[in-house]
Length: 178
Image (cartoon, rainbow, N blue to C red; front, side, top):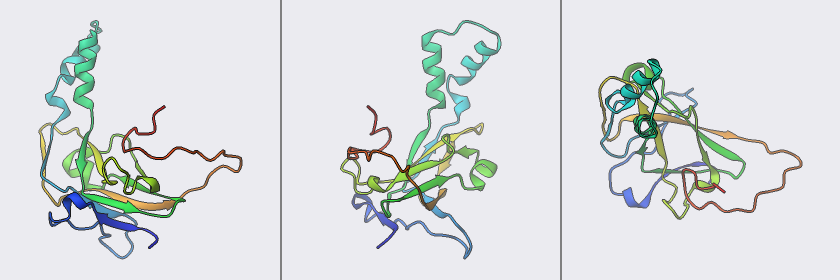
């Protein structure tokens, strides 16, 4: 098996569907939410208060900054899916075209990167979570099975003189911090 998808064992009996392409020429595999999920609007938190102070050149306190930043923090929407691939491949997650246009949902990092060694990692079995921000005016209710991102498998190259890293993956988001 070269590349593909499996359902994580914790969600094996939840009636999830594996990602699939929707047309013959589609490059992306659509990922769906594995559960209902409420994605709050960034405008409901303290973001507006902080933005107002910035606009009026008022001094921001450390608390203002912390609360404003918290409003902009992305949420991790679970998919219940893990992806296996060759060591020189990566799965890239992108917005679906309808996400920003119709639902005001975006991947804040633009592209999510799923490395080959994320599969079956001990922290979460390699479950793929989609980072999303809701910039719409109201909360968005994602329904279980709703398509929220698309993934494309891509080969990558490494530098000729690279010293191969020796570290093993310990988890997911930010797990390779030093």
